Length: 434
Image 1 (cartoon, rainbow, N blue to C red):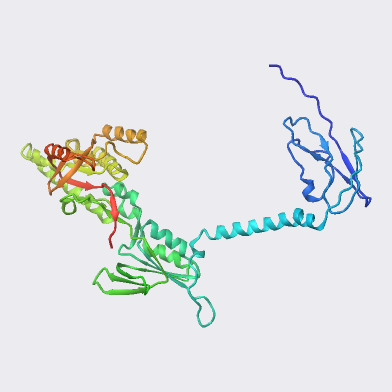
Image 2 (cartoon, one colour):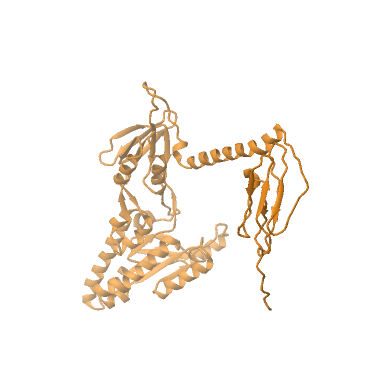
């Protein structure tokens, strides 16, 4: 297609002569994509209209809507132009509707937007409960139960000069839970995943009327009297805490789904203490297996049992822990305990659903499974844990909730017991019934 060269367009200059004798010049040079909004500003000169072909700008008269009669003559340097005389009047009502109403609407909109933005913080939802004798508002007493993600977010939102906040939790730190899997195998230190709670409360105290941390267990709440009853961690001394507003953010606990033996023999990965226990268990089994390996084949079965780790739950926690264990075996164990011990480590990931990472996209779940298999992880989907003992676990094909008695009987008949050195339960969480 041939392109046609465009000829330069003349630039128009316009003047407007009013009844008061004032001569106002129009736009003598303006970009073709601009639109002059002179009518809103009270200017009655020519205007540049944005066109689809921006290389063809032109000017046209746009009379000003002011509430007085006027007569305007337009002339341009490129072509004389004399429009017909036009006289227009505007009454008081029209002036109010066209001039004052938009201004009032814009002011109201700006005020509403500002108030909505401020109300995004919880500060404006928690009103002071009363006034002291001096007439100053008394700080509103807010008690927050918990020290996790929700509790820390509430602390940040509630910290203001009109509020006094008390955080009650038996845990003296905030735990960054996604790092628990890494800390359990020594990739990072456990303290890297913990932030002292008193430091966070101290930071909030600089913005609030007061902020305090109480290390205690919340035992009961008197809703009518607005009291929280708690006991200290050391000697069980009872505490009474008054509040105006109460935030319950105690979090969740591992859900064993009623499986026998889980609470007594399984390890979890929910708290910092769980990560430390798993880390100690892994190292203990490795040291014992390394010592028994010096006896040749005599303790081969026991070594295989010690080096078998079963991870129950194919969610994000179980998948990440399995990957960390595989890296731990291939790198740290091989370097410190030898290739023979590292090659005998067996990691089994058990998931009752048809695939791992069920809440995620199927393509992503397949990539994760392929990666685990390439690392040597034995991924078993459609498999449920029915019983857990100190050194073995019973596995059976999973059945749907509406399974018939025949299906349940067939699954029970296919159940098998397998020895293991450690079992980590990461099959989900449930509410903390404090």
